[in-house]
Image 1 (cartoon, rainbow, N blue to C red):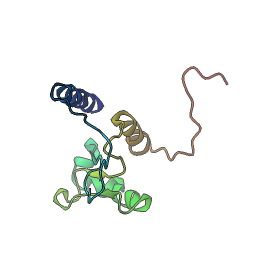
Image 2: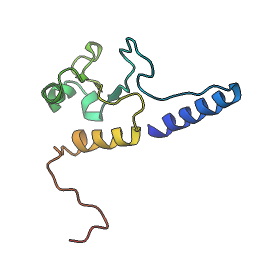
Image 3: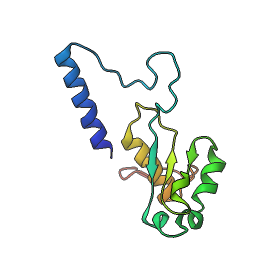
Image 4: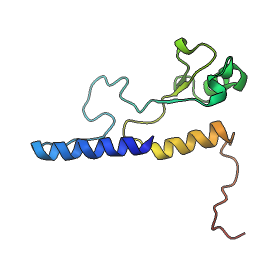
Length: 122
């Protein structure tokens, strides 16, 4: 997921060089109404895509408790499909976003667990 964004940003900057302009990846570079200019991330697992998958996992309830306006499940997906995380800004590091989603949604971590790194000495 992150690789495609990095390549797209590289191409954008390279093309801009040819035309003598500067591109920015800032989320809201000039004042104005920039609704929807964030790095919305659609996310699902195999279990979430099965019948009643979102209801079974409790994803909607957990997401709403965390930040009601930052998570949503599109009406079109019913009780199965994906949910949308609206936290990341447009200039986000998708590798960090993917890591956060993996730790919270797949590994059920809450952030209270101590981090153990491979090379860490006890």
